[in-house]
Image (cartoon, rainbow, N blue to C red; front, side, top):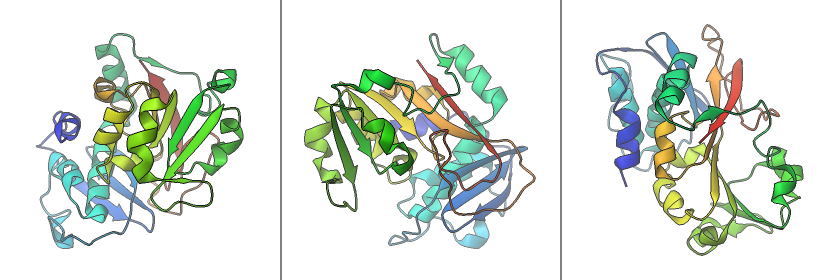
Length: 253
């Protein structure tokens, strides 16, 4: 189960210090090595932190911060996700990653939910989490299954994933599943579908294609000087971000 996380953490330098960690109401940002990364957070702290708050920046390296993704304290794990995104979600690393994987390409600037178009027709589509800004695209699906940890009217509880996902054609998974550790099992169940990992918590790491992901739709921070964190917005690019200036990007293999 931890192999996916180990692959993401492995190339992150262990000799570069973390410059800053900012934890907002719904988003966390980490700065290191001249880069910045963000991830959605959840203030679930039923388990103790691996590190105390004063240790988050004191002498911590980039890789050490990224390793916090393994924490079962989700506020702390969000720091790990943001540190991972700071590494992968920058143009130079993106280009190197794409060059290293045959068949990987950047997709046109189009909403990841809109891209399939009529291909949704008659197909079974599942989303892990609600993507309200995309619902009018998903109406084209033959059948739509929304799986939620806190289900609303018409949703399936997330425990239904064991029964539903093996039969899907398309599956959209929120990047927050990296933080709550459900992603490895969800990918195991989704082997028959085109899996799209989407949202501000998504690391644009081609290594994820080795685990069954077919498309990544995430966010690059393009203005690293603005330190303001605010509640997530819902842009047409297919991701919600708490960072004021960003660029949405998609690529697949």
